[in-house]
Length: 219
Image (cartoon, rainbow, N blue to C red; front, side, top):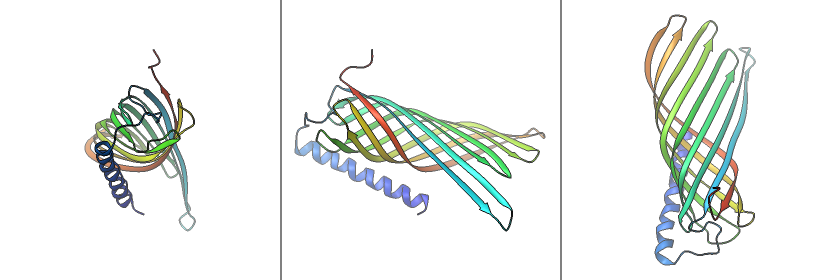
C-alpha cells in the first residue's frame, strides 16, 4: 500500500473519530469512570524503531537503513477524555552502503487527544498536532559530502488504543502519519556550493509507549 493511501486512511479514521466525539458529547454527559478525567495530568513516552536491508546481487549493491524515533508529550485533561498539551518528537534515519546518509528531524508543538471509550480498562483515541520542524541532513557519496539544514512546519495525525493497567498507568499502541514541509539550505563539499530547496516528507509508523496519569502535576 502506498504512503498516500495510508495517509488517506488515517485521516479518514481521525475524521470519523472526531465526528463521533461531537455526537457523544451532545448525546450524554462525560463519565467519571474513565482514568482520562478532567483536571488530571498525563505524561507519555513512546518510540518507533525499524531496520531494512536491501541487496541487489546482480549489481553487487547492498544498503542498510535504520530508523529511530522518540516522542515525549505532556498535557492536562480540560474535559473528560479531552487532552491538551505539548509534544516533542525526534526522529533519526541512517543509511549505509554506497551512499552514506543521516537525516534527523525534530518537531515541537501543541497537540490534542480525544479518548472515545468511557470505561476503566482503556480507550481508542485520536490525536492531532501541529508545530515547528527542524531538519538536518548529511549525505556522503565517495569524496563528495552534502550537508543540509533548515526548518518549517509539520502536522502529526494518529489513531490508536490506550490500555489502562490501573488508574495511573496506561500503555499505548498507535498508527501515526507525520507530514513535514521544510525549506533547506544545502552545502556541497569540497566545492562549497550552496543551494536552497523545499522538502515535503511524509512518514507512516507504528508507535509503542506508556503514560503516567496523575491528579496533580509532578511539582
